[in-house]
Image 1 (cartoon, rainbow, N blue to C red):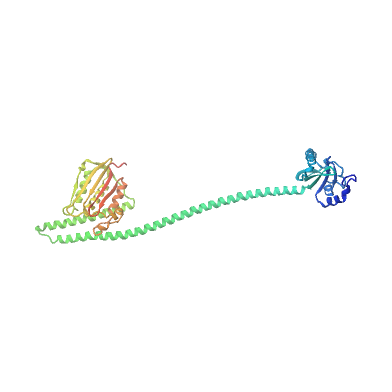
Image 2 (image 1 turned 180 degrees about the horizontal axis):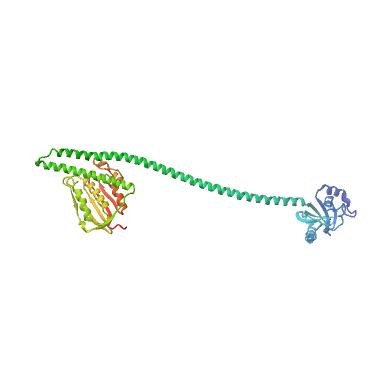
Length: 422
């Protein structure tokens, strides 16, 4: 128990103070207006390292480090002057000074009050040493945890980056596999299409060769019967049939040979300088042997006026094919017009017939390989001529197009550079 001065105003209430002071675990100091300690409980004495009664009637500065004494005095004066306003404050963090001159952290709550017109301050003091040490440990642990969290975050980010990279690689691999699968599917599709084309080709070759060969055989057998001089007209008729069929077979073989070169990329174009009249004369000569009764070819321009630097054989192949189609798909006693004009640096060949024409629904397929329109299925043909012509023309800088109306005829337009740049 603490002892108080018998002259103190607290003497009459000593028992009450004894009970209160010893019941409270925090340190308690009662300080008068002159900052003298008039009472201290045992908790306060132990906290500052003093024996029982050593703090009574001592100046408060003995418990305050020198550097804080001025600030403490200002705070104390303020609380003393404001005691009538019943200010109750806690949370002043200061440093106390023990008897052995060792500083330690404390938290103080000041409560000014007045008894018998005398002003006092009750100071409630808590030793913060353990709490501060705990806070330091907690801060240290927090710093350590922050470091670990940072390290783990870095590690996690690195792992995420790896996962993203793996995911990207997976996506690339998946994309690559899909591309390979698509290529395999395309290859299988092309193989199926090729097999279908081969089947169709063999059927076509069998049919296209069988018919003219039968005609040649028949005419050859009949020629043996017409040995008399007065039968010359009949002999000429069958010789013409044989010649026509041979030319037809020769054209088919040329088409197949050209097709094989295109498919194997072995086609080498040879560009030379030549006069157009040379090609036109050869084309018309070959065509005249295929003309039906009453058919003739009309050429409206003087072809010797044009000199070209082009592939001579491709131009001849093109005109032969288009004019032969005009003859084949036109009736007897009709005219096939060949018009030639110049447009800037190109020559335009316009071949017009009055034949059966191309059905509107078939026109978009006319340059497809092996395609034949519905209205020519009963007429000999391979369906590869226009496909070959179009491919060759595009390779040497030319184009081919057409207009057609069923049962009224067709007009094909071939446009070719006069000079093929090397």
